[in-house]
Length: 337
Image 1 (spheres, one colour):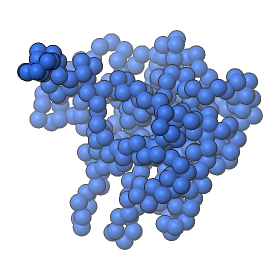
Image 2 (tube, helix red, strand yellow):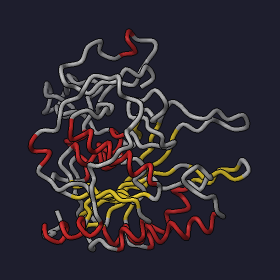
Image 3 (cartoon, helix red, strand yellow):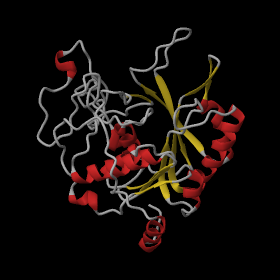
Image 4 (tube, helix red, strand yellow):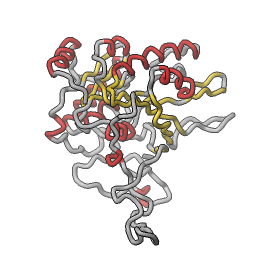
């Protein structure tokens, strides 16, 4: 983790008036669910998150070089949604270049930058944003480690082309010596008891007993109306997706930044696992909801979809979900998640 005197960060929070836990605007969509466990005492020992309503270039400009082990975000796709103004593609890329430049400056020498995007659509023609953004990241000296495909089951239905059911997360690092914790994100092996049948390892397990590498194709439900994390934001990160990035690319006590934080899902993922969280957004309602979600996380009342929960399968009893969950375990009653 990058060294950073506590006094410097405290001064930054006080200067910005950071009150991450205070808000009168509540999160939506999960009030009827049973309460999850409160954060463990170990989860509380890190600094309060810094979540601001601010332009991201102004916000990042006040932060020190090399501060963040992980920068993870999903910028607007230039589609003209409620939180963005549609602009010519060239202007969009120019604005992204400025933000990416600041993110690269803030990235720790062993850090990772994860940029989650979909397609820009112009008169029915799609432009994959990760492809047109690639030269900008390379020009900053960053190295692409994976192009992760995030697959999900729900979305708009297209009439003149195949319906889009994936987006990408481009994982960049600043160098070859980067933080990487594969064991933290292993998933159950398809054949956990499989053994070598011949040779010097005959009879020994052929796979890692801790589980397998989750590969570069990830399947998580996107946050739609029946998802337990749903708020007013139209394009929300599922927390479990960011948790996988946080656990694998940072260590406890590291700092995580989301310069387009929306309703704070990246901050929630960081705080759940003992990391420091920073983020900003220009929409006041989103920032208020992010702060309210942090407060509810601290209180133990925030609903998130648990990591590793199977995706709902209508062909299986109870959709493949357990009928009952252990006490104080976050659960979802949403059938499609």
